[in-house]
Length: 500
Image (cartoon, rainbow, N blue to C red; front, side, top):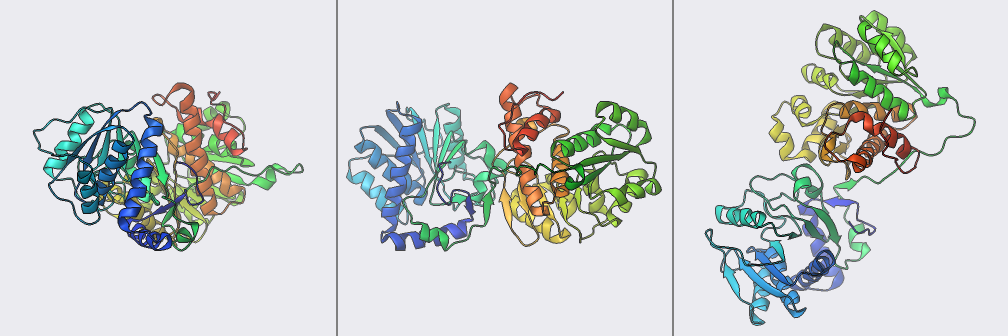
């Protein structure tokens, strides 16, 4: 998205309506005037992305999103483009009535969409069917039109929000436009950055329509996008004791890899010391694979206690299992009261035996684990990821990372950040273990739980993108992220080279 001072701010639909009212007042313009600015921004966006386009098909709904489409048609035709305009109905409402009238006054023709109709020929199709107000599945006729638009294979520009996508939550209750480009107006909508939105918005651009900074300053955002950050350089007199001691607890029979990935990630994330408490059968292999780790065979709580006493931060859950061994270690570790990152089976055990945390704690659930922690269905979590993340943070008095496309980071006071990086190649085993390790390493180096979670999520996702750039997304391994993770943490460009 093009940068401006508030490009990282994300708002709800309710907040957007208040900002729009304030913008009209500050600019001393009417609703139709603001709509014309949106249409002008849309035309500029279209010409940047498709400079050779000569024929447009614009699909308009009855509301203000359709009004943006009608005025885009007016401006595009004035610019010498051929425009075919298809509307869902015979009338529009609100300010869109005036926009429709402006199109007709200039000699424009409106085709009424019929479910059995065909789309006009076009170089680019413009989606102006539904905007921020849609909270349900599109009606059957509109759904059929969306399906036809997608089946045409022509590029799609969505105005403000891809039709069918919930601008608040990122959920799709029915069919939705899959845009190549979305130009969104006035403010960033939080639902365009998480969940199903990743498959629908395409390239996302923000047009602030000339609204002065003073308007934005009066309306605090609901959430923010993470910024790309790294750790500061270390002082020359540094020693390993300055950067904490992470203890990874996990690796039930057959799951040593999870513990190793978390531990290696903690090393690459800069922890001074990293220990692993695991099953006796895994100790020798882990030491051979990574001699920098201190690996301990632990058969129960008594053997774990001395390791807990020496550790400054715990990474609890990777490959832990939920049987007697894992449960006993889990209880002992939580009772130690140390700063903690809880993941995987550590979260599943928490769902069975809930507790609130006094020490700095980061929980890293995927939607299924989040559902178990909240006692709801996974679909309910995905329906409103923002509400789910905040509910988890309040319930457990912890910072929560709700993983997935557009990972969310929430704290118990309601603060929430959204990760704009990551790719589908990261949907593979071990990625969560890697995230656990990097967040634990950041906690060990003195970051607060909030700072460790935000920085860790950002570094992890950016490393995934760099690794995918080298050889593609499919087949991406968690260990492929370790080298770019180290580089990014030091503020260097990631090499994307495979891990040894």
